[in-house]
Amino acid sequence: VGPSETECNAPSESKVYTSTDFKILVNDGDQEYDWKYCSKSIPDKAVTCDLQITPSGTCYLGQSVYGDGICYEDVGYIKGKFVYMAINGKVSRCPFKLYLVEGKAETAKC
Image (cartoon, rainbow, N blue to C red; front, side, top):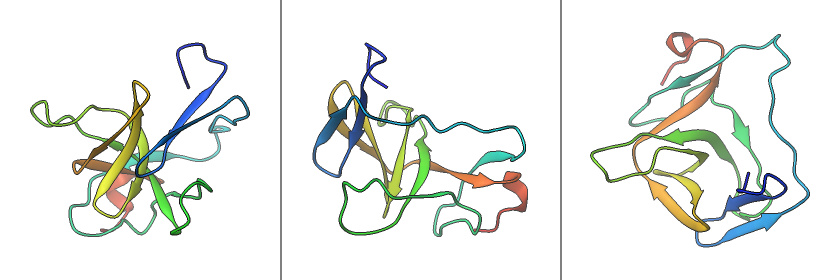
């Protein structure tokens, strides 16, 4: 969500899109989610996304991990080796990532 809180900024792999029509992902309290680190594979309980701005298929909800100033730490989507985020109106990507998984992180298998 942008600074005005009336618009949402979402990155593709090369461009940031802005929209005033968006939905916020919320947990109704019945489902548990956690963050899982997997270096080589996608966790079996990773939460998928379809941003409808990338024609090349499935992505996963995730967040970047700050690594000695290499990356911003923020939420975004994981596609391939990177998590993509919209930071200050620009696309930012980071190879250090956590996947959003259903249930507890220790029960999700990499």
